[in-house]
Length: 241
Length: 383
Image 1 (cartoon, helix red, strand yellow):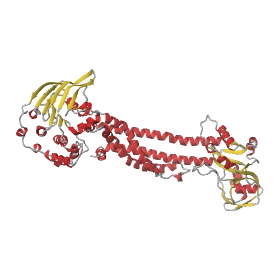
Image 2 (cartoon, chains in turn green, brown):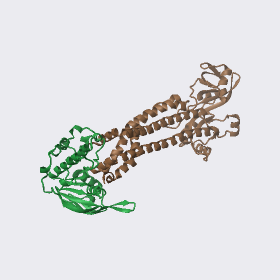
Image 3 (cartoon, chains in turn brown, green):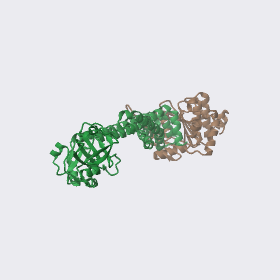
């Protein structure tokens, strides 16, 4: 599903070139839930944006679903993102002038009746129905992240990339987000979460550790072979939508 | 979600920026509309002032001695009346001359008093021009009397005066001018020819010059060259003071418009550009998000340029209304002579509605390019 091969990303700094990613290589199989852990500044977000086709690496290659992302033109890469990738960001990144429903719809490359039905189902499933007509500025942090999650899930992408998705959430909402991502993975999707904490680990099949732009450790997580449905509490958020 | 809906929601969401942008475009349109209306008024006023200044060229028979003509103010030599037609028909005439007005003039006595009889023919203007003919348009059997002459003859408007055995109705008594016009009687050219026994003849062709040349160019030499080709049996004298005054007035009016329009456009474009740049800056996270969601450069540019285009339409209407009101309200104080000529120009609304959105979009072009080239990683990166 994801092949990251010898990826190097350097940025221009005051004292010359600064390495954001330093020879990063790993693979993610279809249907995996992978967590990449690392402290702030370790290059997690840089890695995620590189995998998302938004940050061209200085060298190395990124291939998703057999497609070398940076061999594509800018517009073809944008199309690929629109159709194949879902994003969840720490800062939610909702469109401030669109209501909840429109924000979720904004993630869809095409909107048909089935897509609308899916969106409504997600809005209900994530407990957002009473706020469907509200603007993001009126929502709590947890609600905003649920909107962002619904937006990523709505187009049913093969791969979801989540950057510190629970960084601004209380434990309860953090659990809801991870549960939902795990449910999505159980349904055949692939999830890559980057986080500075260890809260994603219980939900992940595999954990990669990143430090100073390098993958330093890779380990199978404890739940890698455990059926997720067995350890998830029953909440409105992990019901099938 | 369609583009227009996104643009409208964003405009409503960032109302202050949208309002300032609307004011910027509307302000630019307001100034341009009022400048345009005032420039038209200036042109009208200039035309009126020019007309009041009178003709500055006198095209005379070649055999007239210029020294004697200038000393006496007239000569007995004549040209055939069809000289006007020939001059008007010659190629390039209206590049150099305009308002060709044939006249026949003689010193006469009316009731024992000295007077000047001037018969005026219809003015000929350049083909396709909408200018009002200069001079008087006098019907046969009618006369305009100079102020002093009317006083001496104790004749008022509507009364008749007998000139060389012909009775003429006084249609107008002219205001005192302090010139020889005060002892002049103006009639139609045909009446003057008949009274003077000079059918088909004229003394001269009065005209004004059309050349708007710079100070270092010899206007008179060019006029003489043009006349030599068109009417070789004539010569031209230029009343320099009038010509200079005319040129100065015309150039002042043109300079005003030529300076104001680029200045207004530049200031308006800067204002719109800065507001659009602020909008783009505020929307960087949103632009990053649209990128992440797979929106291409065209869509991002359309979001930025589209808001300028959308705001341009109401701004055009507002600017047209405000600009017209300003011109109609203050214009008459600036141009009192032709104050009655001020009127709204509805064609400007069409122009404004077409050009204001385009102007706003062009002024937002650089910010739009900034948005397109914005690196989404800058705003989406959390660590």
